[in-house]
Length: 493
Image (cartoon, rainbow, N blue to C red; front, side, top):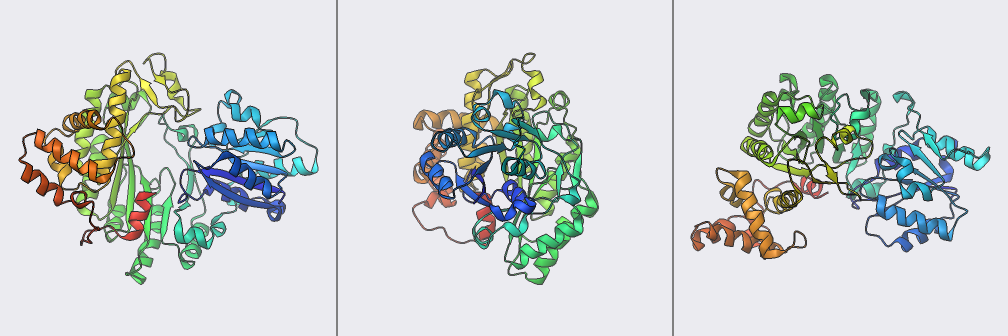
């Protein structure tokens, strides 16, 4: 095989959409190109051995924040044992601050930005000459109609066992400074008829779980309506075999027509990821985030009470200008709105994002290695930031896991942030760890905390027993509100 496309995915369930785009657009070189995916945690020597077994002349790696460190080791070993193999890098992590990165130094070429046209051309020049002299090649953005969609390249294995990533558009018109999409000029849609035809083919092949990676799915409501109607039609035709679709929504843009469509979806068929990030208007202005907080809150409230959609809402701690008290108010406000999950994230300085302009004024200190999480700001010192990191982890284990659905309400009480922070601080003293915690042990610790807060032991035990976590040693009993199997698969991924 002449050209090999590869990446290290965060999990097996994550099928690389980017590599499939490259393969679909290789043109005359497609027959000489294949795809090989790995998962982070794989042994470097085994990855290199499997790559070289294909006898490639060119290996193209997709580089992301989650795999850059491990892929650096792969590239270093690959160039040591097979220096004649040309290594080409692409992806968001190497598209900015490229010259500062060890992996870029090790590689032969780097494609920054869009690779659909630039990568195939570079490969052709490497193979047929003249061999390019420049190491860094800025990706050329083609007209959307010129990009071959990659969905036929999802295998039957992918469809049966993995999340299928799809996109009806690329880019984003918003300028939130912590996000790489802030560098886009706008959002560019694919032709809706062509896109839906591809979705139809996937559906006919057995696909039932679709994750849209569009940053602004509901920006163009007419397009959103057509896509949602596609899934509603499938559900109506085969109600016992529904699809499960995930979309990222702009929180303050939910017109009545779109609400009416959303309300038609049955339980277990629809998930929305909604980025609130901060409810503090001053912080929002500072990071160039445009958001009508009142309207966003109303929309989340409507979705939780009037739809069956599963809501996953994001908040970010550590933004410039926000202290713990401000974040806590936003957290409590979001808890009151009742989303199914609150993703409590810590700010990360993604390469190339404008957030860097706040580094000096707000004394932002970041990890020097991926994922470049913020360690301290002028409002939150290092020790407090680490408490927030642990809060986020325990929140995932207790609140977002769904295993403590009844207990979490009691644990949070009338002051969700303060109460869970106290619980987080205490449980860390008991565990001295945030990972590899057995469910039985976690449940016992939750019960012990409730008793420390004055709840009688029998009542605490009964409350835990009302949750799955209270009977962690027993098989999970099916209930009428249990999530469908494909939703569980998606949430786990």
